[in-house]
Image 1 (tube, rainbow, N blue to C red):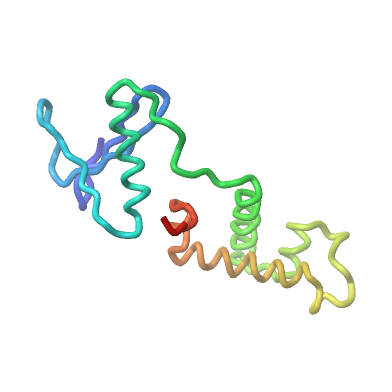
Image 2 (image 1 turned 60 degrees about the vertical axis):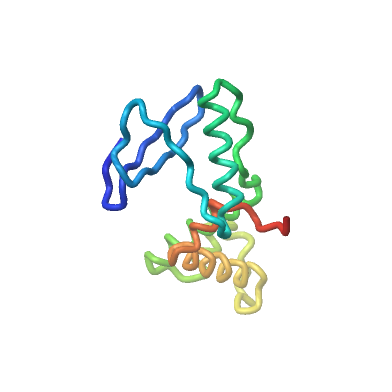
Length: 146
């Protein structure tokens, strides 16, 4: 548990699952608590997390995590972060592409129109978007009309 400028943050481990809890006031023993769930875009995720916590506190299996990133998505994020790191260090798109895809796949000629050049640029742009706050989207599943 730690105090932060916005309140109290705690990690509650029940079984093998960690639940992260935030409170405006310092927690007290013997007091009942309620979950506050604002009706906004994250309501579904927050309600699911609250239900998992309630189930774990009552000795039930919490159930699966709200969402998992697919293997393909994890691999793309890895490439995105590697491309961003290289770009931030001053590497050219060609050098980044050679590191990500292998030097053999990068042509000596026609680099300006090659698919891997465009893909490398998109990876760097995605990394810049993540760096500018887009990483928060990773915490949310794709929106589905419910």
